[in-house]
Amino acid sequence: MDFNDTPDEARFRAEVRAFLQAHATLRRPDEPEARQRDEDGADSLARAKAWQAKKFDAGFAGITWDKRWHGRGGTPIQQVIYNQEESRYVLPRGFFEIGLGMCLPTMIAYAAPAQLERFVRPALRGEEIWCQLFSEPAAGSDVAGLRTRAERDRTGDGSDWILNGQKIWTSGAHYCDWGIVLVRTDPSVPKHAGLTMFFMAMNSPGIEVRPIRQISGASHFNEVFFTNVRVPDAQRLGPVGGGWKVSITTLMNERLAVGQSPGPDAPDMLRLVKALKIDGRPALEDAAVRDRLADWFVQAEGLKYTRFRTMTALSRGQTSGPEASITKVVSATKLQQIASFGMDLLGMAGVVSDPALAPVQAWFQQALLYAPGMRIAGGTDEILRNIIAERVLGLPGDVRVDKDRPFNEPVAAR
Image (tube, rainbow, N blue to C red; front, side, top):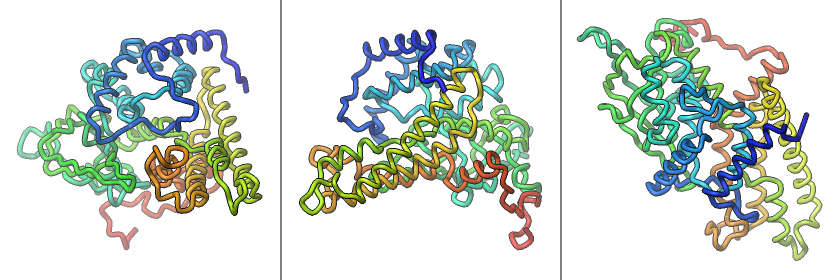
């Protein structure tokens, strides 16, 4: 591993720093690196769009994208460098990651050139926002088990499809303009073979978006219902029945986009411990506390150097390995453990959720509520462990009795 920037990388980092120093506010060292996002705030969305436009105009939106699609034509390591520098600033985040990280790369891979001319620039500049419509009440980790269906409109010339069904956990659907949707077009073939991908306007007649109130009080994701929604065949991505292959493009980009969990992390736990006492003595003197801290610091260092391996590969123009899956499995679990232990240490003070009154700006209280979701978003722990076991360690795959059977066969026959 090489921890130093090359001369070209150093020049790019200096360019990024100059841009951020001129246009953004540096985060204070004692300020939690919480996600700067108010999912329900129109003001926050407006600020995010304004910031995205600034990034686009300065050449920092779509850093790795081809110049013909309004990108910079840069390298993956340049994107890593930009993300590192931007994380040090207080900025509105959380509105464009899915669209630019997952949906638009899928569009670029499968949409017609005229469609890309229409959609890429507005998305990259923050004028239009995209969502991903995959998960369903009965198809979460097993996306191929989805039941939302699309049938050709037999009353016309067959150039339209009619969609009916339901999606769930759709992040940002309540403020998105467009979405990519995976549906079942042929239930008579095995589940992976009967899927097709489309893109669609989220204000299409027949679409109903219902925000889901989360335990944290926010409403970032939604249920989405489709009732006789008409989608032109021209908005199909890939061949009919080829939706699983198209979705793999999206899911692989999702692995890269989700990655590391937000804090609090081991250094934040140390800061909390230094401010607390156990039985009248500094909490840092407690052997059990020190043991847990040591564990998390070791994990944090392991994750850091694993990410460095990825960065080194990107810097050399290589494709990164399974690090994204490994990083997410470890970091999401660690986050939940740290949040829970922090609340244990706070005791009765844990009920105080006002950032102005609670230690470390109530970060541990907030983390306890959002940490479980990090073990689901972008692939559950179980799915990622299967990927690591089967594709990295070469272990036998799980038994999948329904893999080669028609989807519409009765369950008992599978």
